[in-house]
Image 1: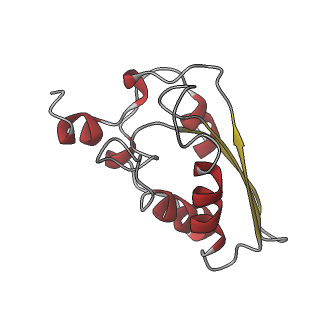
Image 2 (image 1 turned 120 degrees about the vertical axis):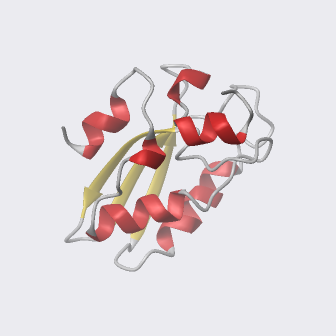
Image 3 (image 1 turned 135 degrees about the horizontal axis):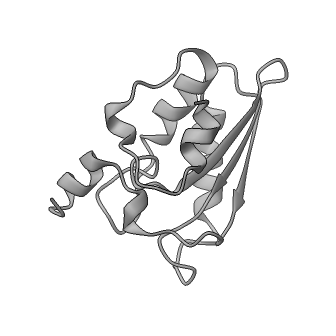
Length: 122
C-alpha cells in the first residue's frame, strides 16, 4: 500500500507506529508532525488531519490535502499558511500548497493510537 493510499483510507490508522518513508516524503511527514492543532496538544499528522500528500520530487513541489477538526475552526483562514511554511522549510521543497477540504469530515477515528493516548482517549 502506498503512503497516499494509507493516508486516504477511511478506517483508523496508527500513523505513529508506521515508519515514515525515506527521502522527501519522510522529511515532509516529519515537518507535518511539528505542526500542532491550535486547540489540541497533538500534531496534525497524527490527528489525521492530513488526507493526502502529492509530490513532484524533481520540481520540489508538495501538494497537501487536509482538513481541520471543525469547519467553524477560527484558524481556518490562517492555518494553511502555517502548514505551508513548515513544509517549505524542508530541504528539497521549493513549493508547498495546502488545499483545505471538508469532505470527508474529520472524525476522531482518523487519529493515530498515539494521538488518542495523548488525549486520554484510550
